Length: 484
Image (tube, rainbow, N blue to C red):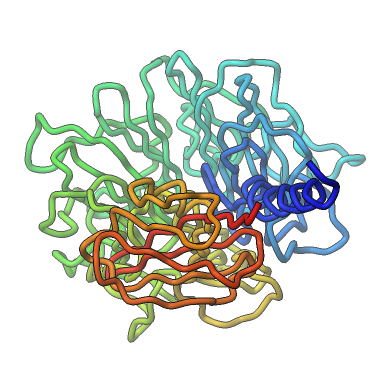
């Protein structure tokens, strides 16, 4: 092998690594993302933890000179984070080893790190371990309280306890600064907390509620879990529940949606015009729902097709679309979102009798992220802050992800010399586009058959991408041209 040939091979391998391998390492593939009051925090598929938005109280897990972080920033270098929960101004997280961690505002003990003293102040600017236990499996955070479930199914709570929202048998405003067990049962699988109420589901599918609730005539304080009967069918069970500021949505085991609480913004759905419902009302007639999530004044549901529907308050575009009157009780599909596997909405906080925190994130099956809503402290992670209304914005699926997710299309030979054969082209395909590694369009060719030849004559050696597009989808494959 002569020196020129070897140099060309080295250059080609460097291009392959720089264009293909490095972007894979940095691809924006998320495992989970949670929305706090005015910040966002998430875990990537490699186990790394990232945050952006408001950080004045240390809720992102690191101390920064600026009050807010404009774009996603990695928190430490560890890649062993398992789950995370975002409260109004604090964060709780679990590592793979089952340890529990907290940071952010600790005015009421919501970080779980013990009582404050003069040297510490109210803020904990970095993640610290909560206790020494190593059997935590799930976390939840809300206004100024936190919850976690252990491997044995026991539920623990700490933080602000006004109206008994911790469920520990005390309805005073006394805060709990370390995790305290809720009741004596060890059968919990799901917990959700909102403004001043908390709901949980046990292993039998029974739903329990505590905190400040409405009994039909007046508000009532429940300082311990109270079981709520399933609507219409006493034998029915629940598979999911989410609590907003003063309402909640539950998913029954027949895949129907049910709501309870305040209907000020239309959060109880399109089948009722009541101002308040103390029992249950069905949200809509559909029965194909798989997941639900409440924001402070809005709600979201994902169906079995991965489509997302939204309703309720829409002051900052957090429903993903514009509405007249800034709210709607009609379940409206968020267009251009398919294959969604999770939705998370901001946990609001109360300041001078006003609610703050109105942004939402959608996590798609390919690991990419969509967001909408307010961005006045960069909680959307789009760059500079502003006071605009932001409707839906989705990350572009990277070329590498698109290639991995579509293996039917065949290219041969690859690497190629003068031309490449494209086989198994879908019947719905309309055109083929050839681009270089920078995305520059080189050729656009109409699809005329299920197998076609694409000329690579006159092109320099290197990496190219071939995109086969139709009305519904697109398939992208990598081509390497090498004349040696």
